[in-house]
Image (cartoon, rainbow, N blue to C red; front, side, top):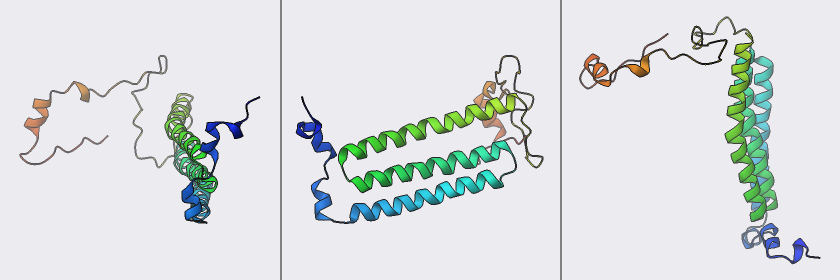
Length: 166
């Protein structure tokens, strides 16, 4: 029977020589990362409790929660100080950064479809009149079909065009 301790892969999970040269550095970094992660997670909770509607609550939870969990995972990896743990932690953080915003966007789109109300002080609703409730497609505002030469003619020389406001 082949065990992990006798395999070459076991070296990935042992503390490297740098941990022996700088004793306590990994733990100090872990404490800092865990504290920062805890603050971000606390801010996510505050955002969920204080924000007025689903969309702003999701924004607070997604941004602060993702950063908080990422810092906590990196803090745990720093505590162990092994290359294998660090690689796994970085893969988990990359997965979080790729999937959490997409999941949040899809949940917000579903909430908009079932008409979860938007806070009354929201300045604008970018999807109003552009969202087909049957096909769930977004209709463009026609700005993609504008000729770039036509935009250049409307600009003053040396100044960028002002964006249209809805």
